[in-house]
Image (tube, rainbow, N blue to C red):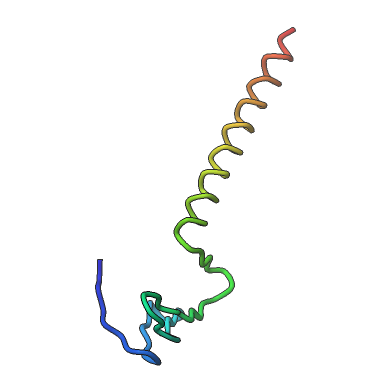
Length: 75
């Protein structure tokens, strides 16, 4: 993990097309502005984990449904 110190208004570049700017610091919170191509998903960690969980559950349901349909054709 890379750890950087940045002050309000300072920026970090990730690759050629992602810019992260410290917009503000208030109490124990840091506000970040992120500029990235629309093709790059940007989520808070807890939202990303929830999306991954839902995708895994949907894939499992799809697999179960496919197996059910295959077995139904046998009868």
